[in-house]
Amino acid sequence: MSFAKKLASGELTAATIKECQLNWSGHGPGERFLCRLCGHKFQLGDLWRFVYANGGGPSRHGNFLACAKCDGPDILERAAKQEAEYERLRFLFGG
Ligand SMILES: [Zn+2]
Image 1: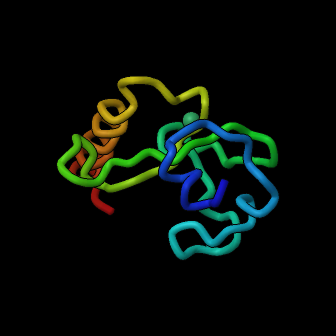
Image 2: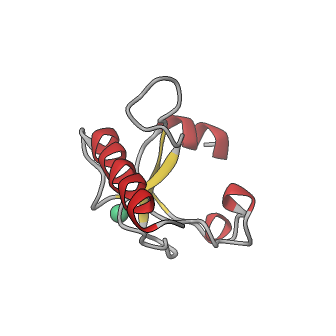
Image 3: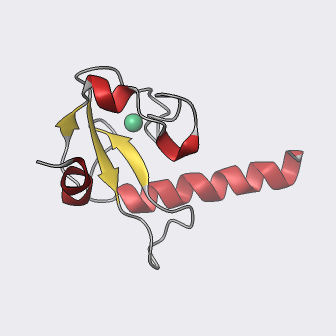
């Protein structure tokens, strides 16, 4: 399966060496190969998936990656809640 197809499938797969070293989101090799919800940095063999969140979903911050532990039918809602909380804290404390 091609990498693009794999992303589009949205299925959990085990992280490969190549994926661990990709420049995710334009950052350094592997730096942003993280679960959006818990911040887990994926290591070789960890299960992860690409979550489509663009196009009017509850998440305003676009597509993201998720680990098997955080995955679930309500993952978009949980990601949106987390974003709202982050925005609130940023408003309160600046930065
Ligand atoms: Zn996670």
